[in-house]
Length: 204
Image 1 (cartoon, one colour):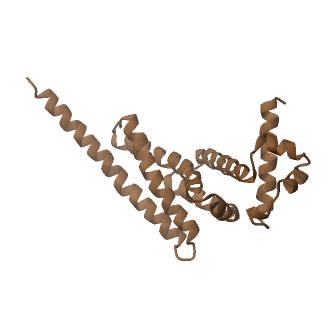
Image 2 (tube, helix red, strand yellow):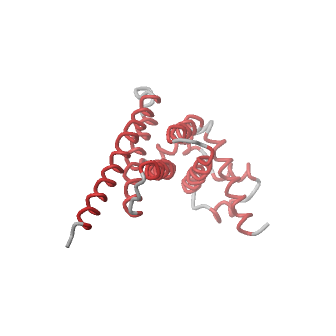
Image 3 (cartoon, one colour):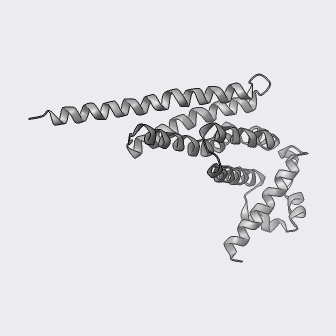
């Protein structure tokens, strides 16, 4: 096993121990010593990999986001992908809630953003294929980022206010916005390109 593989394995062990501890404790009550005891390593090993428990939590969320994205290869449409993200939140609500309380809005938004960007970028590419439109790569990145930013904010509000915001309503609202506005933008782009081509061809 290489040093890189060993390091990753150690980090994953700490992450698993932290997730298990967060099921019964607030993050502020979890200590480095107890995580080291679970992982059967010394404190020096922990601090070699992480600055503190908050940096471990941040790394854990980043890895969780990567794992969620990997599973998008198994989904067939945008709705299924969004449901997948929301299912993950339901299954790990203790982690998400604790992370929100300890790390704040921006860090949690980044977790959602990373997942949503992949979903929305795929939806845009599917729309390009169906409507036979080719977007400039820079604009496509901008469009995916725009929708991801807005959607991440809405999902955070859902996490915070679950008692007042029905999951299915939030999901259907997001899907409605995607299904109406993304094709409309692509069609406008196609019409604009067609007009530009006509104008060019009419030049003397």
